Every structure is written in structure tokens, then in C-alpha cells.
Length: 67
Image (tube, rainbow, N blue to C red; front, side, top):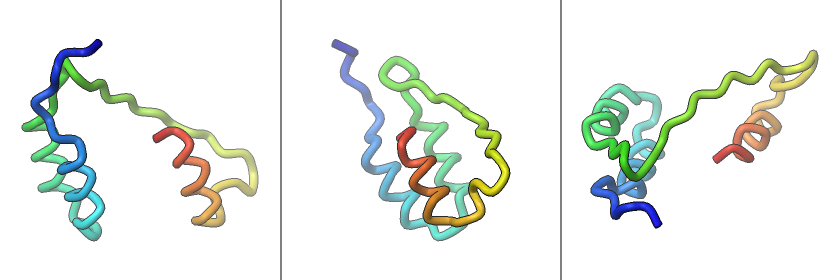
């Protein structure tokens, strides 16, 4: 029901996955191609309880449920 977007989200995801820590150029390209008519961007802060987010795998699983 949304209008067809001009942004190729899969292209961004592949570039982001393959950048190995240098996210600046990837994010610059993201914002240059971002289509506000077809997508929205949300920022979330998570305040962990004591002992949470100490194990990387558990943290990745926690954050993964929002993607």
C-alpha cells in the first residue's frame, strides 16, 4: 500500500554488512539515497538491567528482535 520506493534496502544491508567497521561512507550513502516516502528511521535507546548486555551473543539476540 506504500508507494514504490527508489531505495534498494538490500544494497544498503550488503554494504553495511561488508564494511568491517568503517561505517562512515556506508551511512553517507544511506542518507544520500534514503527515501522518506517509503521508509522511516527510528532510534531507540535501551537501558539494560544489571548484568545485561555483558555477553555479546545475548546482546545481539536482544537487539535483533527489533530488526
